[in-house]
Image (cartoon, rainbow, N blue to C red):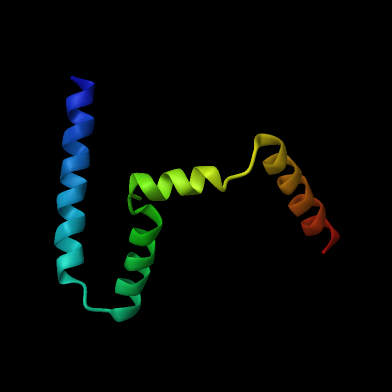
Length: 75
């Protein structure tokens, strides 16, 4: 029963957001919403495959995080 409540809440929230978005007229808010949408847009399988092939290994990612942290703390 808890799952149904969560799904209903999500559906209600979606409907509220759709209603709110349909009434928006402020260009700056619409631009910000568009930016957020672009971040969460679904990529095609080809795009995901290319991104995966060009991605970092776990070791490279760790090294990059350490480098960024060191650079940040030097500021």
